[in-house]
Length: 396
Ligand SMILES: O=C(O)CCC(=O)C(=O)O
Image 1 (cartoon, rainbow, N blue to C red):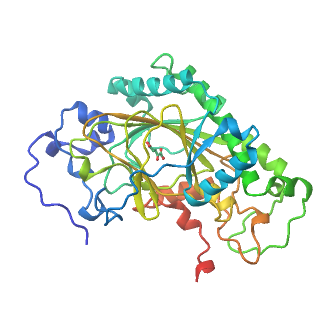
Image 2 (cartoon, rainbow, N blue to C red):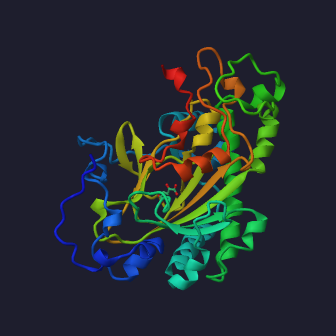
Image 3 (spheres, rainbow, N blue to C red):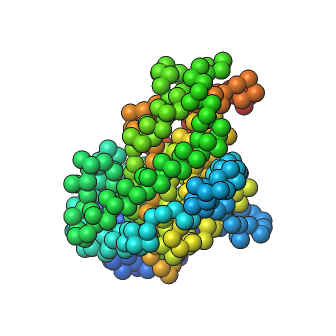
C-alpha cells in the first residue's frame, strides 16, 4: 500500500503549483518562493531517505572510499595499484582518483561555469529544455520527468560529447562551450587510461593480445549478434577510444523539506564508468553492505563508479552499485557526471574469456536501444536497468 504522510494544509505557494511549473524544474520552484515541497515531490513514507534500507545505526558513516593514486599507476607501484583497483571494483563499485593530471583550473572552472549556467534566467535555460532522450543537449528536471511517479529535487543539463554536438551546447555563459569541451576532452582521456588499467586488473590484456581464440564458453540468453570483434583486446581499446561520452551537469537547489524527497533516487549508471566531480556540498550516498553511506567531497578528486556495462563486460565480477543523492535545506549543490561507454550502436556483452563452467554467462547482450526502451517504459523505483539484463536462470 502506498502511504502518504498526513499533512497539515500546505499553506504556501506549493499548493498551487501546476504541472507546467514542475516541468520547468526545481530551481524555478525555488525562484517562485515556495517554502514547502509540493505534493508531486513527496515520497511515500517508507521510501524516504531516512526510512529506506538502513534500519539500524552502524558505523559506516565514516567509510573511506578506496583511493587510486593515478600518478602511482604509471610508476613503480603499478602492480599494487592494479590490485587495489581490482579490490575497489569488486567490493565497492566505487573509488576516488587523485593525482589524475587534470588541472585544478579545469576542474574549478567546470564547476563554476556549470553553476553560472543554472543561475541564468529561466528563459535562457529553457531554450535547451527537451524530453527527447536522443537530443544532443537536454535541460530537464527530476530523474525521468515524463515517467517519475514522484519527482526528485534535481535539475540537469545533459550534453552529448561529440564534435557535431558542441555547436549546440549552450552559448551562454559565454565561456560554457570552451570550458565544457576542454573538461570533456580531459575526462575522456582519464577514462581511457582507467579502462586500460581496469581491463588489466581483470587479467584481459596480455591473454587477449596473444591468444585470440577464446576458450570454450557457454552461449546462453539473448545472443543477438555474433561478431568476435570485441574478443580482441586491441579492438576493445580502440572501441573504448571511439566510444560515447555524455556529460550531465546536476543542480540541486536548497530544498525546504529534504526529508520528504531525494535529490536523485537510488539508481545505477548506464555505461562503463562515471567520473563524478562534486562541489564542496555533501549529498552523494552509495549503497555499501546494505547501508547508505555518504561520500564526502574530496577537493580536486574524482569519484569514479562502475556502470552497468562494465558489470556486464566483467560477467559480474565488478559491481555497478546503487547510489543516490540527498537533498539539503541549506546549500545549492553542483555536480558534473561524465558517463562513458562504447558507441551508442555497439553491443555490450560479457567478455568471453570471463565466461567458463564455474562462472557461466550472467547477462544478456545489450545495447543503447534496450536502455532507451527500458527508461521510456519503466517506472521502476530503483531505476535498475541492470536487473532487466540478468540471465535469471543462473540463479535458480
Ligand atoms: O550528483 C551526484 O553526486 C551524483 C549524480 C549521479 O548519480 C548521476 O548523475 O547519475
